[in-house]
Length: 230
Image (cartoon, rainbow, N blue to C red; front, top):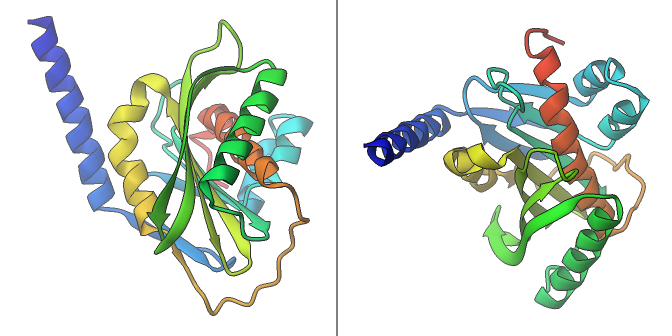
């Protein structure tokens, strides 16, 4: 009986996410990209992120400057599922050899910082009509911390790399997968955009690190501000 109830609850959550994705809103960034996100989620651009993060400490404020925009579920409890976008100059190498190399370096950096990686998968996928890097991870920031799952997709184009990081608590990630997939699949680049880059060049792995940690920080940061509007 309990198994049937659990299956029913998961089915309801999945249907809710699919419905949410079907009624998506579209964000058009002045940085030359656009994507759809679930209706009811909230968008925070760079200036809004700075306003939120200033209340959360200097470290979070510094991290917010790395994020171009973040989208999150204001109705969430405990941890706000979110999608953030980091833009870096330079188009990343999407060869399998380079992806494996950078994934290993990323894992080492996370471990060195005290995180516990429970899963890390890397592959090449097609998004926005081009080859992209895809990383699926499950990790804890500490032994007694709750597990988080994320999906990072790095899209090269227009002389830059666009890192989209989807983050949620491990227990909720599967039910949110349709909404995350809808956002990733809707991502588009405006090839006529001529806005100059304001970001300094960083190694590929640093772009991933910025997206991962922004997802963690934003998930907790937005909860305390979910009733506020910026």
